[in-house]
Length: 218
Image (cartoon, rainbow, N blue to C red):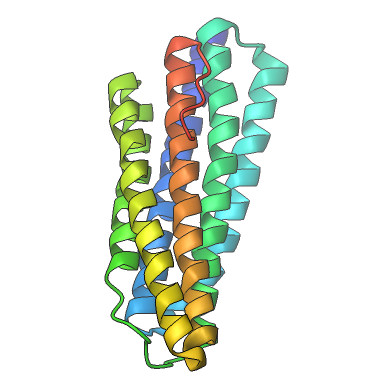
């Protein structure tokens, strides 16, 4: 009966983790959409939702610590709880970066873009896919899915390098664009960091399944 109670509580905990991850993925999409569509109202929604993510992190952390204290899980169950604690930290930081992107939208406030926003939305699309794939790898306990997701980080890094190079060229040629260009560099950097955190999720899934900790985010 004790083990049944533990596994029931653990299942509920994991379901809440997936809900948190889905919210964070949606936040990133909406944050970048607010930027590309210059939608300040949407940006404010993303910023407000950061509090929801923070509350979810605190709730999941509390429940994990209660399970550890009262149920004293062993072996694979202990790895699952430990992985949840690590993943929620990465998810919370992703949400912070989504909020940072939304704040750039508010800061620019309908300022005409200095260049068409093509690569930044593509970075966000790939990164959102990474978050979704990492959560799927967690659900399926799949090392293969985690590795497939982690390889997408290289594509995000290549896009980031291109955005960085192009924005610097524009700012050198047109000094009046430095303000907005700097903010767009921040946005690209925030997305790249989210991708790094998604890679962390994949590493934690691999650890949960195999018991081996691998550093794959170079």
